[in-house]
Length: 132
Image (cartoon, rainbow, N blue to C red; front, top):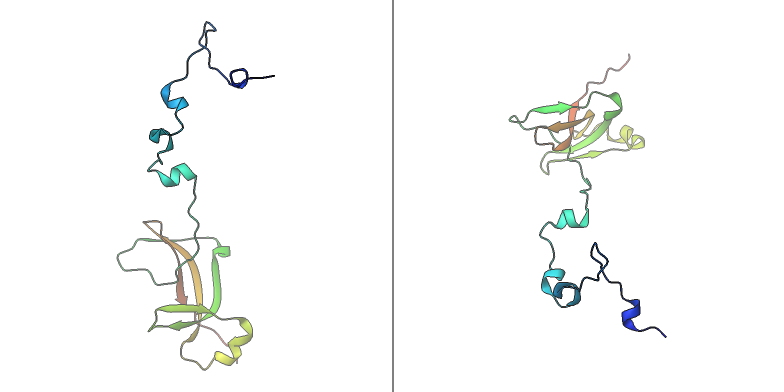
């Protein structure tokens, strides 16, 4: 038959003598052991996830970088609602039905970033050349 002392793990010093446990190791109600660190993100190992990317013209005060690879550019058609300050992508089958709308226009969306590392899509108006 085993007793609790047989099952417990005891720390030993360099010469092999057992080190008695400290009061903090034994007290399950010690508040210092239970205190939450104020570095919540570091303690939880949390990584911020980008869920939305704004589509807007950069402010005049910003220094802007545009990603140079063509895979980060998209030429498409959008509906721009200036009153709501919103831009919507339009599915290709709807383009022919929306050509006469004043809010509908072709745009090139460029993946951009300002000096404060704010990611955004910069919509630039594209002129469409139609063959006669």
